[in-house]
Image (tube, rainbow, N blue to C red; front, side, top):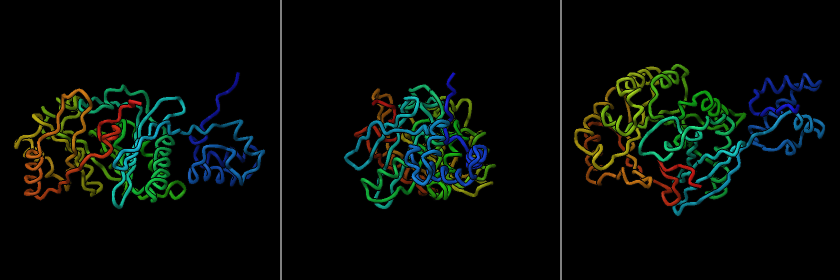
Length: 346
């Protein structure tokens, strides 16, 4: 019976060094291969040109590199790029490059489908098929960095985990991917330029605080009134706002990092003065900022973007309570690449 080859990127550098020692080779050979896999992001053993043909054949016989392929690339009129990314088992996820004047941001996925059930999000309609491995998350970033250099003439500057999936439901793999992305042996990016966005899993927010992570936290909030939040994000019944608040208080006490709240205002759902007052109250326990995000429809018309008047009310009430607020306009709507629209239509 043919044994299944192991994915070489599941090995640590130490395990790679041990592999070569067991083969009667020098341990440093493991360092060379590790550099090819991560720092140089190679997808083929044949590319490892400073390693002998014999050694490359040895690797070929024992391992595979389960790399992603960009199956389809769509470019928006505003410069946004959406990748449909094919995984080694033929499942597809999507990732997005978002250009701005002085930065390029990668919006990456952490799961195939999603574990949660937010009613306004297209991804939530796909059942969760599996978690992404650290190398699959890493590869999305590498692909977007290459596209940023090619189409925008500059390297990738920022990463947000706001693509498909709930990152904290795949925390270990997300954490390993970020460790590789920020390592000098990987992409060498600053953790301060990485934002992990969660719908709010209290236990995992506390774990991140205990792990003393250096990346930033954003919470997809959308309402600070339990009843309303549960109606749009049903899992809020399991993780109510009181639990979320307690976890975020713990996060701030441990990390001293301010919290970003992602917040969409919908017509007839959360567009009243009472909604803003609840949000202001929720923001008070720790330094925070609010990103008001333009809503991107997902075909069925159940949710509609609130009026400009409602958005202006949010801005003026938040500002008069000294809460930083930014109105974020959506990018890539014409290719279904905007917030909440990733649904593998391709």
